[in-house]
Image (tube, rainbow, N blue to C red):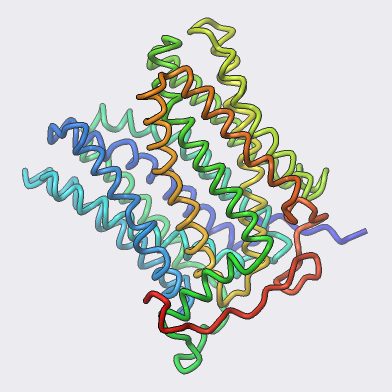
Length: 435
């Protein structure tokens, strides 16, 4: 029998990292809630102007990610995490300061959102690449489960805290909490005592084009990661199409009030919280590949239950909430395991570039899905759009029949584990490659 691996929270360095990350994630959700309200309430922004504000936060994922991965793979990640959160503390703190002196304008909010999005890309890619240096490889699923739990908790608590603070203090001053949350995270990060591997020396580093090629090849040259990404990107596309329709459908077709919709989403989000807490136990009980197969299947099928809701009655609300919660639970189980798998099968020197390349594609499908859902709802009607999008959400199940990911009996021990297909060396850059 294999020796039991202690939980990640028994590692004092990870515990400090996790506490700081949890506090900053709650602050981030407060900002996600309050920043648009600053635009609407304080500056009287139009719907289009608020749309631009939200888009500014996601532009860096596509534009900055690849270069952020290269930059992070050439240095130790902890100083970058500290610097990113200092930057976020300063950028968010500018909003209440400008509001206090009547100097806040919409263009300033756009600039804040763009800078915040850029710094968040640096932190998120760096964090995913840093955690494997904090805990043992065998502790990665538990560590990622803790982080996913914190994220789910933040999504539940953040809007509630944000609503209270906006009502009590006003939208601009509510953002001061997020600024303070990053200060706490910086203090925790600065207290860490983690030995990171030496980055590649300057003479051994490939050029920009070769570095990008290596990062892309780390994903698309590996059968496990390639199949994982294509499946996850398909799921993100379908899920965001469905969610775009879901909000309008539940209000206009089913007749739910704002409070009823909030109740469905709030209680349903508890499923995601439970998924973060129990993901490691689920995986230990039924195995790695089987847990991914179960999560994919249930998360894809559960939203079909939305079609059985007929209004704002108790039975319909129960169906909506239960389906949302079950899908959220399984989605977090999937996320915890796949993040751990990505971290394990990628050499440390490529971690940041792999995560950047992966996330660029993964999150690039989010606006496409939203556009697809909106278009279907506009031209076909809300009920047909809901039917199409929940059926589309079942298509990732197809990967369970051919992807090697779902045949893994356990999480691999490292990049050279015979459980996974070997990755051939990345090709050298050619003149035709983009810089």
